[in-house]
Length: 364
Image (tube, rainbow, N blue to C red; front, side, top):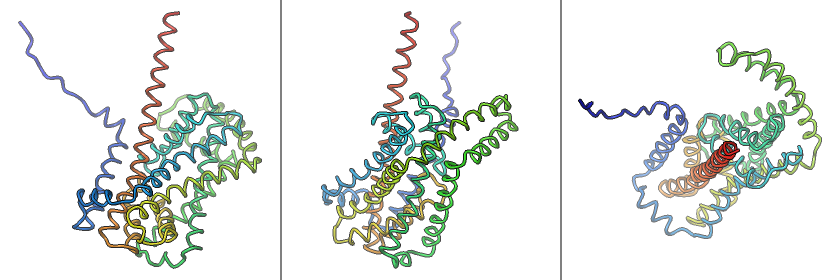
């Protein structure tokens, strides 16, 4: 007797657990965009597309180039550090590292996933763990240092603009600046003092052991001591390279500048008479300071609130909403999607090479 045909149930739990942060980030993005559009009754998809069709395509192209510069300059910084450590890497691979950092930073709270994802790719390419750790710590230190410096520049250029923001925005900007200064000092200590890094890693191993997530803690601790010795040699080499440090700092400053210039170019594209480019640059610099305070993926919601507040200095609420959505679409959402596409290509090529290697081994 034939068995009755039953539909096979599809369990989506494993998929959801694997992509939980991506799903949450997409939900936050949708909610944020809808909230921005709801700020004005006249904002709709049709009106937004009409405003883009009237935009200056030269400045929109410049905004796109600035977005690409955000990825490119991080790749340059990582490549520069790797070369100093005698671990040269290609431009293509350094772009992969930057894409991994930007994408996973954008979909995880406090950007916690960016560095590990980047480290995984670097280790897969044969770079030692100690070299990877030193490279990423130095780069994130320079990246974090650039935020307070950008803030100092915008305060010097437009000190009165800070007081035009709302009270909530002012609190976010000040808090964000203080957090970035603290993080810069902390990351510098990690680069300079391997003992502090060793204590943090040892504490993490102890916690994982208590949670029964790792075994053979003593064996891992012995391995960690050896890694810390290698790391000390790497960090000593890096700190002594002044020209390299200056280059890495400039690359990170250019990366931050590229991100800010997206908003400047979008404003020029959508209406050059909105405000002077210097005013827009200063406003967006304040936004960058404030958006780094709340540990939300990509600063979603916080960045949009600050941008709407700042753009409201120069134009109507409806035009501010259009400018904000287009700026964020390029500087954040478009950048993240591009990085995701780059990583998908990287993983597809890696899996293909892995299957080819396994097939060749079998043939032998």
